[in-house]
Length: 278
Ligand code: NAP
Image 1 (cartoon, rainbow, N blue to C red):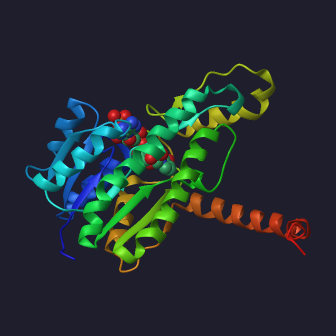
Image 2: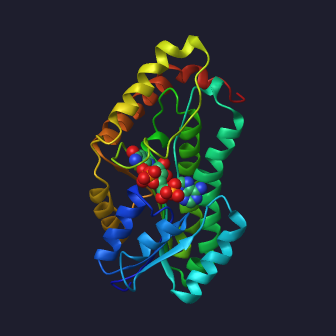
Image 3: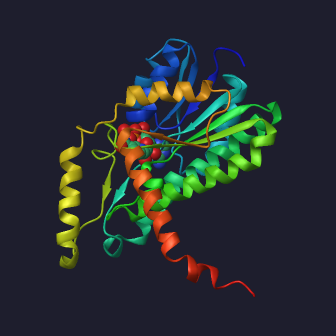
C-alpha cells in the first residue's frame, strides 16, 4: 500500500468529516469531500491547493452517487478509503415523531451510506483493495429515550457493516463500523432535527433528557481531532477491526449494555431453550 492515498469522505463541512479530512490532508493524503452548498465547497477546497477536492452531493440523491464516484475515480484517482460520515440525529419520542422523520433519518444515515458503498465497491473489488469506514455511533449499540429513529438507523448501519465485512473480506476490502460516543461537533446543535412535543405523559421522562442534551452540546468530552488521529491509525492497521468504539463514554456504556444483555439472556435461557423440536 502506498504511503499516501485517496480518501472519499461524505459530509466534510463540519464536525468529524472536517476533522477527518484535515488530518488526512495533514498526513499527505488526497481527500475528496462531499458538501451540500457552494460556501462549504469553497471552504473545503481552500484547505489545500491541490489535494482537497470538494464535490456537491446530498447522499439522499442516490441516483447521483455512482456517477460522482466514477468521476472521482477517473479524475482524481483510485479511492482507497471511503468514510461514510454524513449523517444527523433525529430526537423525539417515538409516539410523537412522524414516520416521515424516520424515513428521512434512514434515507441519510443508512440508504445514503449503502448507496456510497455500492458505488465504490466495483472499483475496490476490482483492485482487491480498499477500506470502507462507516461512522455509526455508540447509539448503534446502546439506546436512550428519544432516539428511536437515530438508534434504529445506527443499529442498521452496524448490522449492514458487519455483514458487508463478511462478504468482502476475501476480496481484499476491509470494513469497519466506527462508533463514537459524545463528541464536540454540530450533531446536537444545528444539525439535530427535533420533533415537537405534545403528549404530557412523556414529559417527566423526556424533558430532562432533551434539556441535558441541549446543555451538553459544545461541551462533550470527545475531541474530533483525536477521533481523526484514531481514524488514521485505523486505516493504517494491518488487521483493522470490524467494530471500533471511540471515547470513554462509549466504552463504558457499551460494556454495561453487553453485561446487561448477557445477564438477561442467561435469566431467560430456559425459555429460550424450550422451543426446538425435541
Ligand atoms: P455535524 O458536525 O453536524 O456534521 C454532519 C455532516 O453531515 C455535515 O457535513 C452535514 O452537511 C452532513 N450531512 C448531513 N446530512 C447530509 C446529507 N443528506 N447529505 C450529505 N451530507 C449530509 O455532526 P458530526 O457529529 O460530525 O456527524 C458526523 C457523523 O458522526 C454522523 O453520522 C453522526 O451521526 C455521527 N456521530 C456523531 C456523534 C457526536 O457526538 N458528534 C456521535 C456518534 C456518531 P451540512 O453541513 O450540509 O448539513
